[in-house]
Length: 485
Image 1 (cartoon, rainbow, N blue to C red):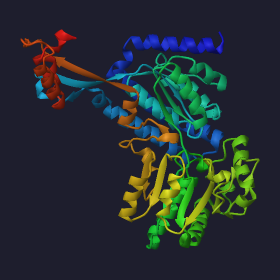
Image 2 (image 1 turned 180 degrees about the vertical axis):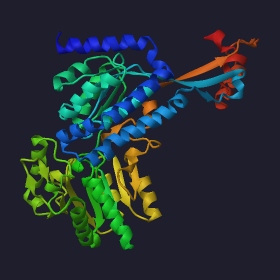
Image 3 (image 1 turned 90 degrees about the horizontal axis):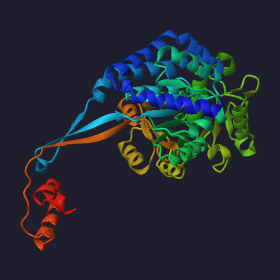
Image 4 (image 1 turned 90 degrees about the vertical axis):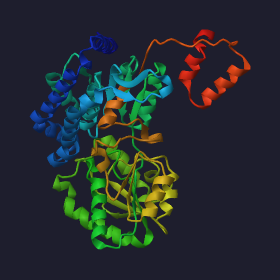
């Protein structure tokens, strides 16, 4: 059987299994979440090995950014899924009396999850947690660009999770093309805007709802912090938010930094000091920073630095190691704003610092670019905070820290505009993979029949009043509109 036939048969089998209703029970959902936790606990070393092979991730980074996040998310879902599933009572206006209403969350059906290469474990398993919590059957397509992690998922998931309901399909663009030809009840995609447009076009043919987790140029704003300890802590968090997550290859990593010109020298010197403290005098030998994914991405990042004016703006780092696919943490001061490095998402260990006369100008600077996935602002100025919140648009805003919003299950995670749409994490993941069905229960009581002509002037005015007062029960039953459709 060819690829297309295999994919089609897989989808057919999943749809048949979903129709049995087995995935809708709370027992099935809890069993899958428990099994997923077992998968992570019992295969931690194998996960670390796969992430090191694909991206050179240190075990500490792998646990912090991937394994720990999956454990937290699955444990939270396991403790909350029964509450999430319960019908939610809805208040019904008195004029509908006697009646009661509720909102019932039901699974969407057969869902497709595309995961990304930069965090190949958590960006696969975290959406799955939401999908199975909601009672769906799932096809998982790991990224072929992280082959060790993809192979781990393909061989390990069937050993722990219900293989009749959750299937992993590996492959390259040809497999993705065949997957997108199928009819899905939901597509969840994490990746680049370029591929997202292809996914959306395919989904539109079947009116399939999609969630797109993309990225963009996430700015950090550094306001004046007169207290030296606060300034140092802010710079530490900036270093962690730029080079900590997969060497900057993360959708929520800091892309560029905005600061007032008078603070730039002190900022750069402290950045250099903290980089040396975190990653050593020779970062390539420290083995604590991830490497670049592959040669193609390595060359793309090197090309960003080849522009003479961009190269002239380098104030720290800039060395590259092609054999090991490693680029040193690099700081650039005021590269040309029309250069490629300032117009494209960097997705790597290069940090441009853009200076301005007044930090309030940062709002206008951010608004001149597409809406980012996140804005990070280090400030104690409450008025400035309010201005950032009211005058910018982004997937999230974090004050005085970086990236912590991704691990907070009580906050929705997602983008806006070109940084994506839809949201997940915690209850928001459950909602993403559920349909909220409105249910209304009424009684068969006697209705009052009108004696006057159905469309008399009196009745017209009564209807007008009823609409103004939102008295739909009065419209339907006191006036007997059902008889005069």
